[in-house]
Length: 90
Image (cartoon, rainbow, N blue to C red):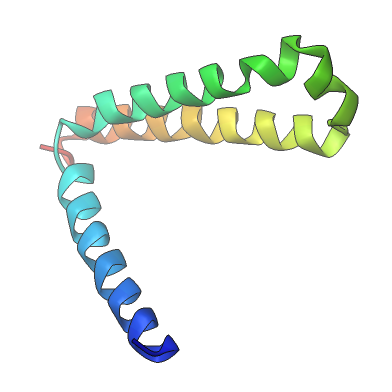
């Protein structure tokens, strides 16, 4: 398969994933997924906080990016809860 064919195939897969995400994001089921993603982000970054090997190679930008991801997760959870209370997410 040529390069362009692979890109088309990848685009179709991303479109299917987008449809699935749209369905999930409009349901009450989205909130547990957001909590799980936040928990995964925290667990994933724990070694970079406590392990000295990670500390040796990480700079300020890396820690800033980690904090940015945490804040984005918290914002998404807050926003989803707000939309649940308004009845937009059913």
